[in-house]
Structure formats: C-alpha cells, structure tokens
Length: 247
Image (cartoon, rainbow, N blue to C red):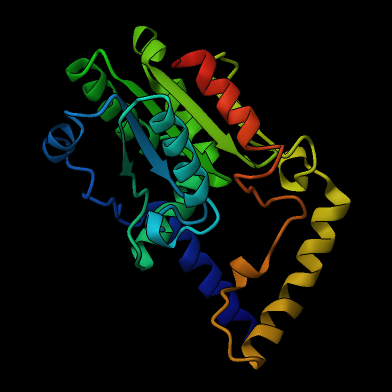
C-alpha cells in the first residue's frame, strides 16, 4: 500500500511538472475587438479558484463587477465585460492550473498581457480594467507586471483578497482590497487559517451527508475572505479609485 501511494504521488508530480498544457481558446481577439468597439471601458473579468467560473456562476465576484458597471453607467460611460478563462474545466486544465499557481502564473499572464496590449493599441482612447478575486487577484498582479510601461497608463487593476504570498505590484493604477485587514488569507493570519483548514474536512463531510454538492476546496473558507459590493470596505474604495482614474 505504501508503495502504491508513493508511486501515485510521484506520477501525479510528473504529470503536474511535465503534462501537456490545457489552455482555453475562448478569448478570441477578433470577436473581442468587435464587441468592444462601442464601449468606453473594457472590464476583463477573472474569477478566483481554478479560474474557469463564468460570470453568471461567480456569485462571489460578479456583484462587484456589476457594481463597477453601474457606477460607470451612472457617470455616462459604456462598459463591456469580457470574461477571461485561465484554465479548461477538465483534468488537464486543473493540472495546468496547479502548475501555473505554483509558478505564480508566469506563462498564463504573458498570454493575457499580450492581448491587453493589442486591445490598447487598437483602442488607445479606452480604459481597460482587469479585475480578479483571490488567486485571480494574484493573476491580475502578475499580468499587470507584464504589460509594457506606456500601456500601463491605460490599464487599471482591481484585486480582492489576494493571498498573503502574492507579490503585489506597487502602482497608483492598482487597487488592492483586503477588507481593511480583516481578510485572514490576504494578511496571512496563520492561526485563523490553520483553524479554517482544520474545519474544512468536517464541513465537507457534513455537506456530503446532507446531500449538498460542495467540493473540498470550496469547503475551505478563510475568515474575512468575502467581498460584498454594499460593504464599506468595498464599494466606496472602488468608486473613489475609479473616480480618480476615469472621471
């Protein structure tokens, strides 16, 4: 049994390190260039987790994107939301996601940064907002780092709950939200995170017994890692940021 477990771990490690890339191809520039032509602001949506949750299912982050859109609309700006899927929703997609996570999104951020630069060159009069939650925030930070110097003036980044090990970019064009220091994952509160991790298997087992479809990873919940648009730690900061950079 020990040999089987060891061999399984080694094989999984080899797949993670050397397995084929599974990169989505749904971010097609010709279609995006056409759909964004009549907008003033382009919002690139990037979910947390595996990075493949569509906006209609991302109940944790879509309300914030909708709040941003409503704010821009109230100011007279037309905006369009372009979902960016980091990984395919299959086994190889998850393997690619794990590899990229430990690699701090070194390769996938190149892909999005290149496309953002193409958007900026095609529409120099438009503002581009890249937004991400949790691991999506890490991805946003890395992507912004890859964008060339001059193009950075046209790009704004909004992140929420980026994990504490993330290397955040120091820029006036990036808004980093951590619920005013209440997000234990963002600030690296080891005691609270350990407690959350300890409780996770019990929450997962309880959900299974109750017949709820809860994945093990979703059962893990860091205290303060929820971001709500009406919250004083969220919408006022985003609106102030957008007002200074766009209005």
